[in-house]
Image (cartoon, rainbow, N blue to C red; front, side, top):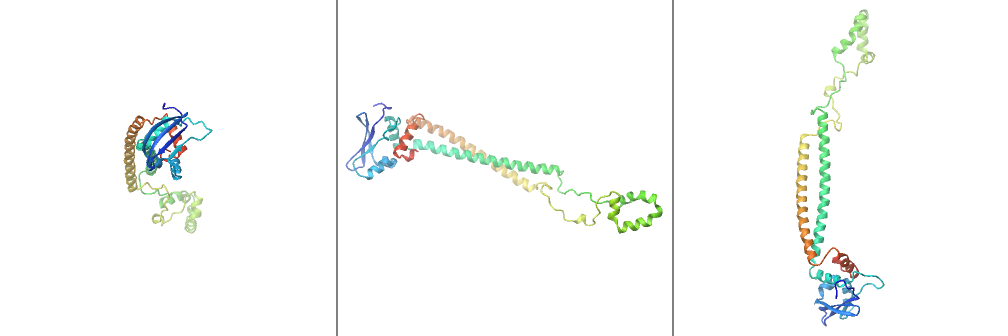
Length: 273
């Protein structure tokens, strides 16, 4: 019987103790004894076999759904399923490696995004430092006029109206704010301004040195972690290539895996899905 021959049914003929079987393939009325062995591994893999063995009897029959075209139900598919039951690690190793590689790629993507965000924060802190001239002392606004400035501003008035000097002096002493506004001056001098509490504004001070060192250390740790993840991913890729080669050598070609999965879905072979 050819490997691509479509089957009508597959029958496990059990021994009286129901611990061993002979596997018989049936196609177009022809029967072919294909394999024999212990029943337990096949029952563990096939839900359809579990359901039938629970009802008693000395045979287990696998048949595709009637009324549907089932190109996957062939001698080659049954052969690959028997091989999978005998050595499931051949295919499962490929799947395990693929799952681990996907997890590593997700971790690498997350770490890369975190490193990018950390670098943006550091750049922002450096720009703030440069904008403040590297000084930790906040800029003190020029909010008052000193004594010499008052004299310079009043000197023209004094020269023009010497006879009014006593009155101007009295007026200035009693209403300095009004005089200051009239001559175009700025806010009054506050003697307590030098010792006043300066309200902190975000971004007014550069990032402290200790924060820069902590950020640099964290960035180095992330870079090292990324290197470890990338190295592990490279090793897994090589191991996956070897696992693929072993699977192909065992007959699990990518072209026929679809048929094997369809067989698993029909008869409840969960480890293949």
